[in-house]
Amino acid sequence: MARIPEEVIRAIEESVDIVDVVSRYVTLKKSGRNFKGLCPFHEEKTPSFTVFPESRRFKCFGCGEGGGVFSFLMKRGNLRFLEAVEDLAREANIPLPREEPDPGEAERIRLRTDALRALEFATGFFAAVLARDAGRRAREYLAKRAFAPETLSAFRVGYAPDEMEALLGYARQKGIALDALVAAGLVRRNDRGNFFDMFRGRVTFPIHDLRGRVIGLGARALGDEQPKYLNSPDGPLFHKSREMYGLHLAREAARVAGRLLVVEGYTDVMHCHQAGLAEVAAGLGTALTRENAQQLRRFGVPVFLVFDGDEAGLKAAERAAETLLAEQVDGAVALLPPGQDPADVIVASGRGPIDAAVEHATDLWTYRMERAVARYGLGTLDGREKAARELVQVVGKIADPMRQEVAFKLLAERTGVPESTLRSEIKAPRAAPGAGAPRTDASSAWIEAERHVLRAGLEDTGLWDRVEVLYPPERFRDEGLRFVAAAFSDLHRRGESVTREGLLSVLADKDEAIRALQALEPAADARRHAESFLARLAEKERLREAGTSVEAVVRARKDFPAATP
Image 1 (cartoon, rainbow, N blue to C red):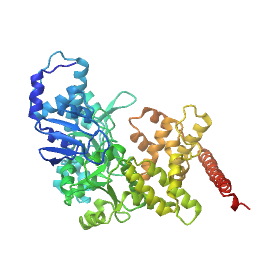
Image 2: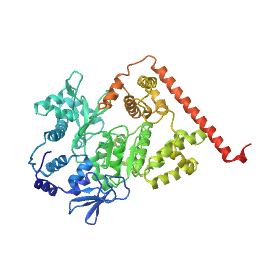
Image 3: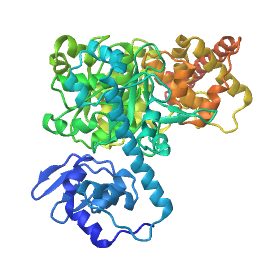
């Protein structure tokens, strides 16, 4: 292992402010001579994580984690010790003399460092192209979206030329290593072994970590190209499920405002900033992830989901509310008029409607509950049962006992189903037909049926609404097809056109899924087979529900024999 003299490590540790470093990940509040916040290493409601500035240490009195600034970065950022030292040494501007270098570890750190530099280089290159003749079309698009030059500059928006090797060629001239460009997700290699630019003919939006470093890029097509949005693939620096756009700028603003707004897109974030709402961030996909929710919880402020009020926005808010509930995040849903996202509202009317929507927002559980009630209705036995069953599973994901108790009580009041019945359902939930853990020994006939469902869905995406109800992605038995189905659902719920090219871009880092997708050659009878498969599933569900009803009658007669004719 590479070895750094002890005195240099001490000098680095003494040169950085541990409160400042920890504050990039945890919302800290002054508590006497120390600072407290929610622990980033375990779930808690009451802050037990303490930073001691004088001793330059941290300690969580809930889970026991503790140490110095290097330990914190290693645990929170999943870094090796040498990587943590490297990062803070650069920050403190302290050179690192080394002894006994380990070639393997040194190469890993070198590649990570070079990838960061490559991303910074690409960000500057794309921003420069935007200002030139080649970026005229992109500038016109951004002008139509009513962005001020200052906003574009603050977010470092750029344009990737519609050429196969524009960035690659310029990077070579400037001595940027090819492996760094690949590791950064800026360059890819085709089947013939040739390298080409990942982003072409798109407006680029740099994605930063909480330290303000560019770790990836998002890009939007200017025309009807698919996919409309494209992110950097997962790699050494970037993990789509963990990051949020604009969160590095929202951190301090959220503390001051006492709230954090979550929107759906890059342009929503930028327009909110332009209107004076800096406490805003966006997820990088079609759904807020568990990692996103865990990060938001540590901000220690309520989270408001500010989404378009159309059907796609309602569904997205529903999924996000469920994720936030499961991760014990306080928050609410603030819906805008149908067909209007935050950017549209701000351009038309300023920030006023956003503030009003937040002021009249619906708490997460009430929103999730009412969505299920609206979907099934409570006017029939079937609708009431389906709403209760669905919501019981949501309650089961709430880890905090107190929150779960309250949710049970509210659910019982809303549906009229006794709490005891709801609790018994969560203890022994019924398995949906064919549900359960993915099977490794799935029959070839069943997997072929799954292929037909996906083939038919690609021909007619309107079919996918039924697929999601009867056979959601998590039930696909073939792992590769399961990934394809999940990507299909993400794009479909987002309202985007679902194409093979779009799916390939989304699944760029999943080889098994790509192979499964490429094997989905068109079949003339795909629709017929898919319809037959879905019909059988619907019939099994009907028979299961009928069987359940019969069992209930039998149990009732046993429990109350006097009432039996």
